[in-house]
Length: 136
Image 1 (cartoon, rainbow, N blue to C red):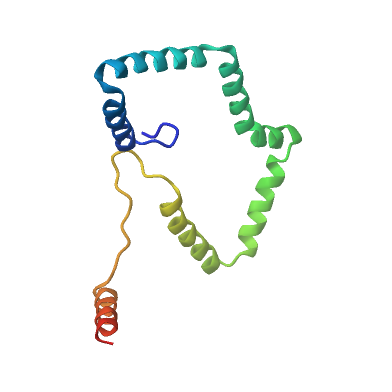
Image 2: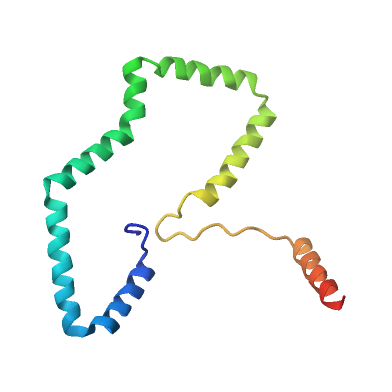
């Protein structure tokens, strides 16, 4: 659960720093002030307009495709490229896409990111390289 790019561990660290800097009594006052400010921001009409505009911008490309009637053309282009691209290249592309997706998509809550597999040969050759570097 990331809020504005701040995860739970970072949030905990920020709270500890705030407790040290502000002290227990001032931290309660600061928390109330921040809470009131956030409530005012979230319930304001400006915030609603911003979120509404953000949602519209997110769905704009799909809406434009539907309005222009390009869905059918888009499907035809996809089918034509499937016919042109050889199956071996298509499988390579999907494998590369999966590899890229594992590094570019954030892991789901509770799941660990996949670790890269290192064969014993790779490990021993890397170890041998380090030993050779140290000896020279």
